[in-house]
Length: 114
Ligand SMILES: [Zn+2]
Image 1 (cartoon, rainbow, N blue to C red):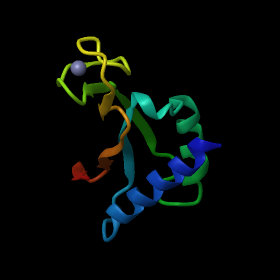
Image 2: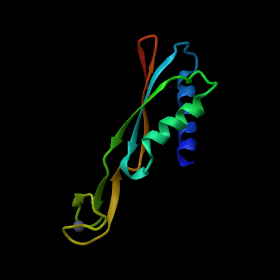
Image 3: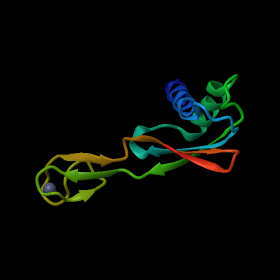
Image 4: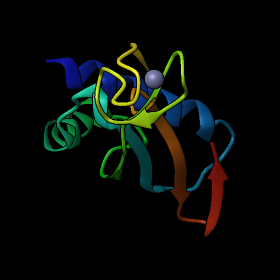
């Protein structure tokens, strides 16, 4: 399952942010690019499994979607199609392929910025 390895990556990133902090992790916020085809429900489930037995266990995973954006390589037209609607050239992806760990909320009402 694709989502499980991603979830493991998120958990280990959170753990490395926590270094030295004793607070309980309440929420983990991630932004998921539309083009990653990550299933948010499966990711939440995988996160639950991946965090089991770690200080991240029981933490809520909050996700938001980053909309896909593409730009024409020759004229700069931006849109969502894979061929430019203005000149027919190829498009390059400028957003939507990323997975970002945006924020970790810890109980000591302090936000650890990622
Ligand atoms: Zn174009």
